[in-house]
Amino acid sequence: KQEVTQIPAALSVPEGENLVLNCSFTDSAIYNLQWFRQDPGKGLTSLLLIQSSQREQTSGRLNASLDKSSGRSTLYIAASQPGDSATYLCATLSSGSARQLTFGSGTQLTVLP
Amino acid sequence: DTGVSQNPRHKITKRGQNVTFRCDPISEHNRLYWYRQTLGQGPEFLTYFQNEAQLEKSRLLSDRFSAERPKGSFSTLEIQRTEQGDSAMYLCASSLVDDEQYFGPGTRLTVT
Image: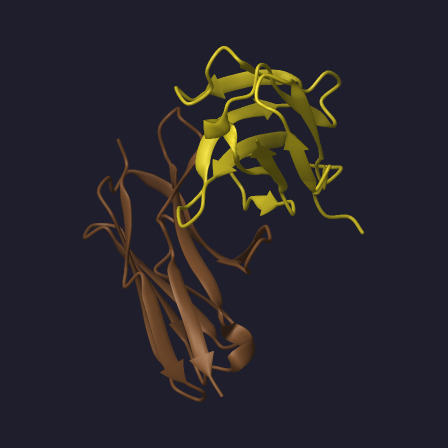
C-alpha cells in the first residue's frame, strides 16, 4: 500500500525567500505525481503534474522534481509572496490497476510580509 | 466556468438522515473520482468511474455509501443513515484517462 509523507507539516518564511517542500513515497511504481495547493476550506488547485518518465516540471515560480527510484519529489518556490500562503499537497497515481491518487497530509506554508 | 462543480457547498444534517451530493465534471472528462478529506489530513480516495462504470471502491466506502454516474456525465454520492464520523469535506475530481485530476470546490458535510 502506497504511503506518502510530507515534511515539514508547517513552514513559516519571510517574503522573498526561496523554499523547498518535500514529499516522499514508499512505492516507486507510480504513473505520475501531482502537486496541489489548497486554501482554507476550499478545494484543490493543481499546480504541477510530473509523469513517471520525467524528472522535473516548471510553471512560473514553481519547479517540481521527481526521483522515482528514491521515492522523492520536491516543490521549489522561488521568491515567495504572501499570496503563496496555503497548504501544499503532493499525491501519487499508482501505475497498477488501482487508479487512485494517494495524498500526503500536506505542508502548511505561511509567507510573512 | 468550465471547471468541476459540486452542490451543495455545505450541508448540515442530523444523525440518521440521508444526504446526496452532486458533482458535475469537466465536460470532456471520462473519469470521475470521489475523495473524502478530514481536517488536517490529505484527501482519501472513495471511488471512481470511467464513463458510467464504477471501476473501483475503497474499503472506506461502507454499504451506507453509494455512488452513481448514470449517463457518464454528472455523479451523485449518497450517504444513508449518516453518522457523526461522516462529517468531512467530500471532494470530486475529473480527468481524462490517467491524466491530471481537476478538483471541485467540495461539499462540507456536518452531521449533528
